Image 1 (spheres, rainbow, N blue to C red):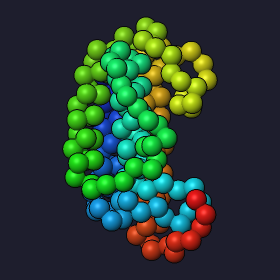
Image 2: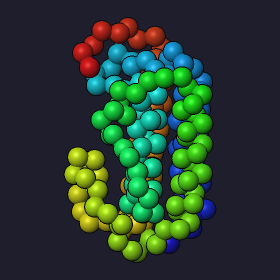
Image 3: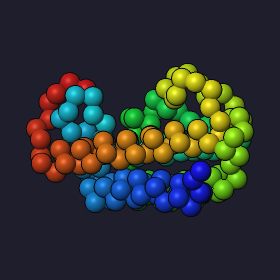
Length: 159
């Protein structure tokens, strides 16, 4: 139905958008939460997305052991450069995982309910669609975070 190259083109667009935002904001703003109730920092959101890709494509599709602390992703912070380097490595691994996937085959493991994925049994192809779903929605969310941070919204709302 969709080629590997088509899938990767759209996944890469979302990753390019998010890494571009984080790079453009720099170390300070990328690690800042805007004054929006429940907002994450762009750094944390990109970290979360890299965790999604690594786990869903790496563990559930490709069958690799992936150590992931989903809750810690949202509290992560640090310098931008290492995160961008990690994003490049995750992107390269995603390309390999997509090319080796068997779209109609079952997942290689069951995802934990706490990971808030789709609430039905998935094939490897459906898991890859979930990866894209997460990348696309969080790219849009990160554009809003960037806009709020650049607008200089005052801090102070409870998180």
